[in-house]
Image (cartoon, rainbow, N blue to C red):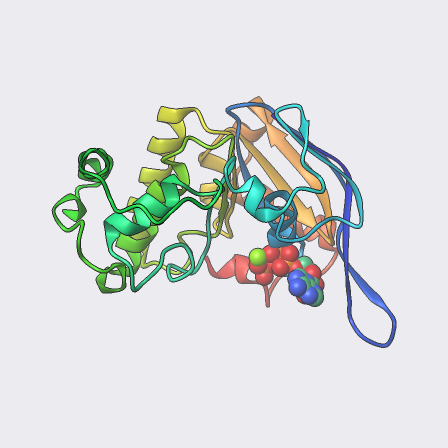
Length: 264
Ligand SMILES: Nc1ncnc2c1ncn2[C@@H]1O[C@H](COP(=O)(O)OP(=O)(O)OP(=O)(O)O)[C@@H](O)[C@H]1O
Ligand SMILES: [Mg+2]
């Protein structure tokens, strides 16, 4: 279970003033819950995920994961319990390392540095088992450099790397946005399969309202650093993309024409 209490993060914007990126957010996510996060550009979605992952420390508030207060923990220390996949396929994997080296690194994520250990035979067979169900043939290319993979293959590998230690929390920040629609769908299907199979507590940022409503079991909308809509159960099931767009217009009180939302 993840609990945020009055979490606030500001950034200096010059001239002595600040931008409140995340504003007193209270949020409780039950164990195993799959939450989709929507909101227009600059709403604070990535900052919220960055606060949870420890990339930024909050100015105020508390973050508690499975009963442990991790508010002041470093990003590295949290990495053992939190898996992440970013929008940019280049970000989640090391291009000049092989598939098996990436997997081995991910397996030891957040642990104390040990003497550089090579990839073991048992590691290899474990990696093959993890990769085979993807249907991408990666299991027979363990010694290929990751830089040779396509964007979709890299995102699939990132997802495996983020989840292979069965983290307490999985954070996905528009992880299919840079992919073509067909590949995006494959990576999304893989996402729901892994999350379901491992019962992972998950936060997934998306600009696709259809995905936001139909994937997972709860949808939150952010606006100006706050959570302005929180949907689950029958209320969420009944909600259409059209209704959601209306909600957007209502909270923003302005037109949406230049928003990326309408383009997806
Ligand atoms: N490192 C930073 N330094 C200064 N300002 C930042 C930083 N990170 C985010 N911000 C600002 O905080 C606000 C929230 O940004 P954030 O990236 O969280 O939005 P977002 O909801 O993820 O938007 P998008 O949909 O465009 O990804 C924005 O005004 C942004 O400019
Ligand atoms: Mg973002």
